[in-house]
Amino acid sequence: GERNNGFDVLYHNMKHGHLSTKELADFIRERATIEEAYSRSMTKLAKSASNYTQLGTFAPVWDVFKTSTEKLASCHLDLVRRLQELIKEVHKYGDEQIKAYKKTKEEVSGTLEAVQNIQSITQALQKSKENYNAKCLEQERLKKEGATPREIDKATVKSKKATDTYKLYVEKYAAVKSDFEQKMTETAQKFQDIEETHLLHMKEIIESLSNTIKDTHLQIGEVHEEFINNMTNTTVESLIQKFAESKGTGKERPGTRLNMTVEEMLV
Amino acid sequence: GERNNGFDVLYHNMKHGHLSTKELADFIRERATIEEAYSRSMTKLAKSASNYTQLGTFAPVWDVFKTSTEKLASCHLDLVRRLQELIKEVHKYGDEQIKAYKKTKEEVSGTLEAVQNIQSITQALQKSKENYNAKCLEQERLKKEGATPREIDKATVKSKKATDTYKLYVEKYAAVKSDFEQKMTETAQKFQDIEETHLLHMKEIIESLSNTIKDTHLQIGEVHEEFINNMTNTTVESLIQKFAESKGTGKERPGTRLNMTVEEMLV
View 1 (cartoon, rainbow over the protein chains, first blue to last red):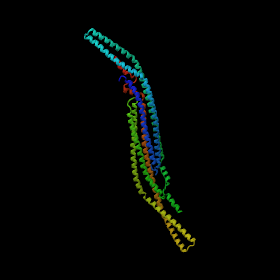
View 2 (view 1 turned 180 degrees about the vertical axis):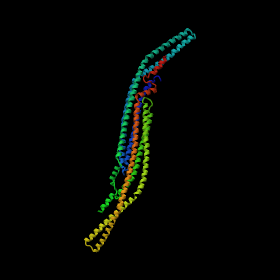
View 3 (view 1 turned 120 degrees about the vertical axis):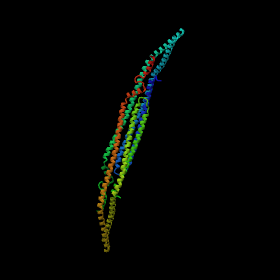
View 4 (view 1 turned 180 degrees about the horizontal axis):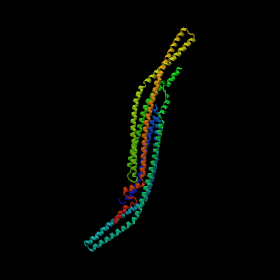
C-alpha cells in the first residue's frame, strides 16, 4: 500500500540497479557485435583492394588502400577485444551486486518488521479513534435526548473504555514511532549509499567505455593521417616511373628499343 | 611481338586507366555499403538504449546513450550520402575517360601505321641482309673452289642484285625511321600526358574521399566529446535527485509521509 511506499520504492530500485547493470552489459555487447561486423567488412574491403588489377600505373595505389583498410579493420577488432574485456568486468560487478543485495535484504529485515509493526498499530490507532469518537457522540446524543441514567451510565462506561483503548494505542504508537523512524532513516541512508555506490560504479564503467572508444578514435585518426601521407608520397611521377621500370618501356622514348635492334642489325 | 612493345604497353595502360577508375568506384561503393550497415546497426543500438528500463536511478543515462548513438548513426549515414555523391563523380569521370580514349585511338592510328610500316621494312631489311650475306659467301666459295667463269659471273650478278636490294631497304628504313621516331615520340608523350592527367584525377578523387572520411571522423569526435560532457553533467547527485522527485519519496526521510499521515490523524 501507500503507507510503506518509501521502503518499497527504495527496495525495488536496488533491484533496478542490477537490471541496469545487465542492460549496460547488453548495450556494450551489441556495440561490440557491430564493431566486429564492421571490422570483418573492412578486412573484406582490404581483400577487394588487393584483388584489383595489378596492371597499369594506378596499381601501387591499391597497396596504399589495402594497408590502410587492413589497419582500420585492426583498430575496430582491437576495440571489440577491449569491449569484451569490459563486458566481463560488468558481469563481475553484476554478480557482486546480487551478493550485496542479498546481504542488504537481511540487514533491512528489521526495518521491514518495524514498518509492518507501525502499520498495524496505525490501523489499530485509527480504529480506536473512530470507536472513541463514536462512543463520545453516542454518550452526548443520549444526554441530549434525555435518556435514562442507566442508559447514560452504560454509554459513559463504553466511552471511558474507548478513551482508554485510544490512549493505549497513542502510547503504543509513540513507543514504536521512534524505533520505526530510526530504522527507516538508517535504511533509507543505506539504500541511498547503495544507490550512490552503484551509480558511481556505472559511471566508472561508462568512463572506461568512453576511454576505449576514444583510444580507437585516435588510432583511426592516425591510420587516416598515414593514408594521407602515403598518398602524398605516391606522386604521379613516382607511379609513372615505377610503371616504366616494371615494363622496361623507358620513360622518354618508347621507340628506343626497336631502333636499337635495327641499328645493331646494321652493324 | 616484342618490336612494338612500347606502343602496346602504353596503349593497354590507357585501358587499364579506365579499369582503375571503375575499380575505385567499386571500392568506394563497397565502403559506402559498409558505412550504411554500420549506421543501420547504430540506429538499432539507439533503439535498444531507449527500450531499456525507465525505472530506477540509472534510467536518465540511457537518454544520453540514445542521443549519442543516434548521432553516431547520423554521422555514418552522412558519410554514405557523400560517398554516393563521390561515386557519381567517379562514374562521370569514367565516361569522359572512354570518350577521350576513343579520340586518342583515332589520333594515334597514324603512329600504329608507322609502327607496322617500320616493322615490315625491318623484316624485309633483315631478309635482304641475309640474302646479301649468302650471295657474297656463295660468290667467294665459287672463286675459292675454282668454278667456271660462267658460274662465277652468274654468282656475281646475284650478289650485285642482293647488294642493291639490301641498299634499297637500308635507304627505305632510313626514310621511315625518322617518321616513325617522330610519331612514336609524339604518341609516347601523348600517352604520358593522358596517364599523368588520369593519375592526377584519380588522386583528386582520393583526396576528396580522404576529406570526406576526415570530416566524418571529426564529427564522430565531436559526438564523443558531447557524450563525455553529458555524462559529466549527469552526476550521481542529479540522478538520485531526479529519482526522488519522480517517486516523491523525499530524499532524506522516506518515512516522513507515513508519519505525517499519523500526526494529522491525531490532531
